[in-house]
Image (tube, rainbow, N blue to C red; front, top):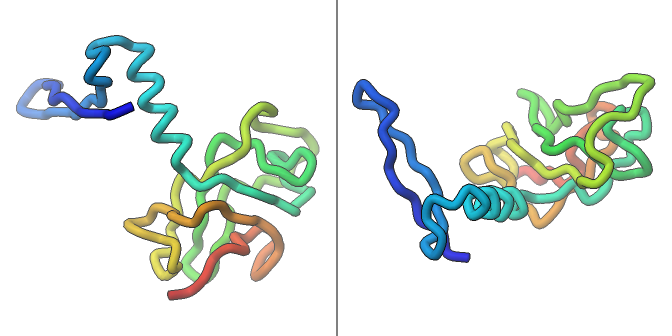
Length: 133
């Protein structure tokens, strides 16, 4: 599906860009499909071996998206140690943001690896896919 964007006005000289499907402009379902397509292009968390994380159900992460990065290592900032299971069972997590600009997979703080793995490295929950430039 080809996507374009239209400019809308919020007011006081402020604007926003709204993605639209050229074959269905103004259709809320088309916009939802466009947003889902963009989200589907984010790298998936292929494996998470941090069993103590609330988002880890059976070796996989079920947070909607995770954030990677600390000043000194590729820590998973979504990691939370609680006695409950969290997230959405039908989803596999994806990388929402990566603060490790020095990673070879990072471009403008977005991860471009095909997929990542999370496990113990410097910390209990780190991005194992991290590779210094």
